[in-house]
Image (cartoon, rainbow, N blue to C red; front, side, top):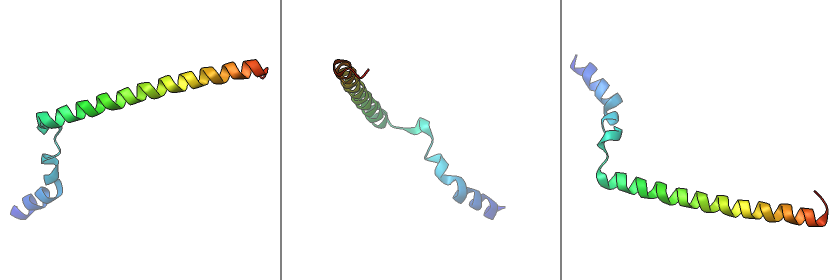
Length: 66
């Protein structure tokens, strides 16, 4: 019985440390800040792509290809 418990511990013991509720407040704050930074970068990228596509369409219209 002991060896069975030991086998289960070795196979699944890491799951104890991977529980999402066990994060420290510092880790949660760091993740929240990283998400905020990445969302800001994504918004900037989308704005730049929108502007470039608008310029591209305008240029095609002036050249008569659209």
